[in-house]
Image (tube, rainbow, N blue to C red; front, side, top):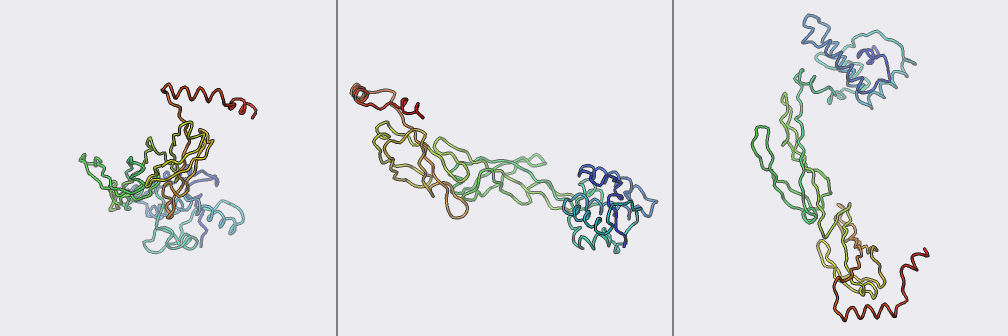
Amino acid sequence: MIFKDYYKILGISNYKASPEEIKQAYREQAKKYHPDINTTNTMAEERFKDINEAYKVLSETVSRKKYDRMWYNHIGKRQKVNYEESSRKQGSVFSDFFNMFFGENAHDNVNIPKEDKKAKKVPIKGENIETEINISIAEAFYGNEKKISLRTLNGKMKTFTIKIPAGIRNHEKIRLMGQGKPGENGGRPGDLLIKVQIENNEKYRLEGIDLYTNLYLTPWEAALGTKVTLSSINEEISLHVPQGIQSGETIHLKEKGYLDGKGGRGELITNICIMVPKTMTEQEKALFQELKEISSYDPRTIYNKL
């Protein structure tokens, strides 16, 4: 049996040719030997099959590496080999050489450009259609149904109902099978892919499976410590705030965040924000003035030493 020189068949002398160079060479050879053009050349169809076979192997990284290894193992080093056609079974697109080294079923997903598939009436799957939908954090957490309307190829509006699963991740895509563009030559239609965008709000920010929120405290709550009720996405939490907590510090609450898809949850991370009143009564001003006079605390002195 002949060891097929697929590079030679595609007219490639550089065995380190890039995928684009291989694709270009394939198109040139396929156009030259296409049976529809070479109606009087009885060998054109066989040559065209070998060209497709060569492109199938050299256009895929794994099969190309396997082929190159076999070449060196069988021949020792690359040398010019005249083109010869391999024998193939009646009606088979691929040669005995291809089937021996790559398997009888390796040609099921032949990597032939779309325009050439169309010319040979090969079934072509329709193109997918992609769109986006915005949902709230609560909708993503609990799951929901949303409706979207899209304009079809014939200009009419079509409404789709999308089931959003609980715990869907940000930027995850929902696939509606068969709702894309129609296929060609009997190929099945493409799919509709809906990219989910989870929107943050004033209360929560979602990062991965963790939820972030702000906890606003008065100066005396931060100084003395306190107990507050904090709302998570699905419950009320009693939270102890230690005395002396500073703005910018965080408190991490495990298993109170977003769903992790494994039955657990991320963290609810609270960012401490100490708020000073903009308006005060005379009594409040007097108390702050008294505190100023009796306190030796000076944060600038402390932090300047760091």
